[in-house]
Image 1: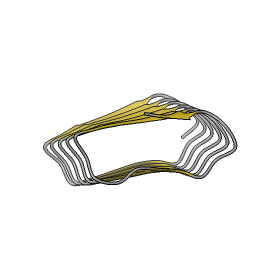
Image 2 (image 1 turned 60 degrees about the vertical axis):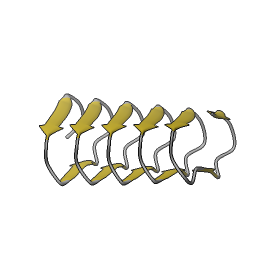
Image 3 (image 1 turned 180 degrees about the horizontal axis):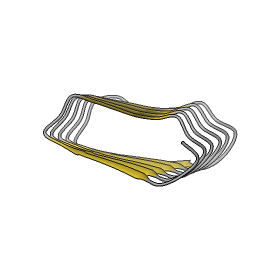
Image 4 (image 1 turned 45 degrees about the horizontal axis):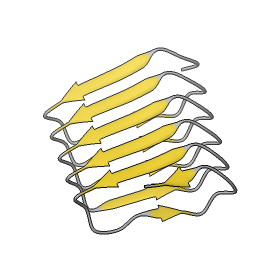
Length: 92
């Protein structure tokens, strides 16, 4: 859709392909946000992707995080790999 929020607890997959809103997942495995904005929050998961043009990605106690967009920020705590291939933003 074009907005709103998606929240999933103790699940596996969650997708937000819209142009806004937010996605929140707890104790799951995969989360994707392919839209152009909003935020993605993931706790105790495995993989997180944000391929949009903005927004932020936060991952705690995970393994991999990718931000291929052109802005926003990527934050990873107690993980293994982090990538930011965009043209702006920050990686922490």
